[in-house]
Length: 111
Image (cartoon, rainbow, N blue to C red):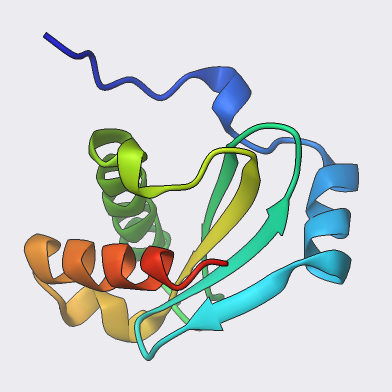
C-alpha cells in the first residue's frame, strides 16, 4: 500500500528560494488558482493564498485543501520542479472535488 505523506523537505521554506521562484518562475493560472513553477533539482512546494481573503480561518482552510490535493496526487506533479500554489478568493466557493479538478488541469499545463 502506498503511503501519502508530505515531508518537511518537500516544502519551500527559505526566502532565497521564494525570491528565485518569483523572479525566474513561469506562471499558469485560472480564476481560482495560480501556479508559479521553476525547473530545479527536486520537487518542492509552497502553498499560499491571496491577501484579499480577509479571514485567516478561510485562508488556512484553502491552504489545507491545496496541501491535501497535492499530498494525495503527487504523481501529477512533475519531478525536478518548484511549485508555488496560490489560492484565490473565488476558490473558497468550490467544493473539494471541483478544486481538485481545477488544480490537476492547471498542473497538466506546466511545461
